[in-house]
Length: 276
Image (cartoon, rainbow, N blue to C red; front, side, top):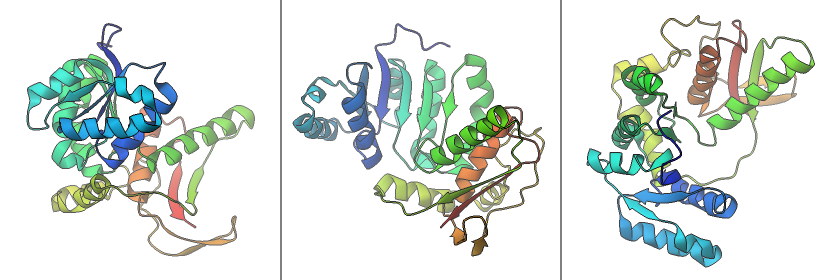
């Protein structure tokens, strides 16, 4: 790992002026200010200062948070930011338009990267273009770290581990059932959802419809054939379920993790996302 202890910051939040970026900054200042060296980053210094001032009204320690500026169209500025931190959290979408230079800057600087994208075709391109180099450099590129994919990913991990370690059973099928949710869609989130469809060509959209499109090319495929597209009655819950808008993202994330973990969840493994 190249992102050593000599880096000025542990974490840089890129895109701090957006809805998601502000939420991340609030979490950093509220829970980690005394433990983590971090900075806010983005394109517009004035807006970054305004966000910092707003945070400081509730959390006075925010006044000391450094501000870094860069531009997605200026690769040198992105590398300069990435070179100062161990981890860069990217919160600014659409990633098909704005994300690629940030990923490339992190790999160049030897900096770990995570984001909140939900754009499967873009991630497919990033894997194809940069996975090998990132692996060679020991750089971790972790996509899909927003709300939707995290419950599916960690929920599956905890469930499968519990069954294997405590019950000595293999898991054959996991269904993630989402109930009532409360939240806010930022402009970047809406743009990312639109980008996942309108900014990609028809070939990429067809490829992303494959349930195993994020798996390594030589990975063994499982039995899943697609996502739930109609209303169904769940006998276990005794409730009707409908398709979940994020299922085409979340399920592919879980399948990729299973493949990268040498199918530790199981080779004959089903995963579904539904809304109840």
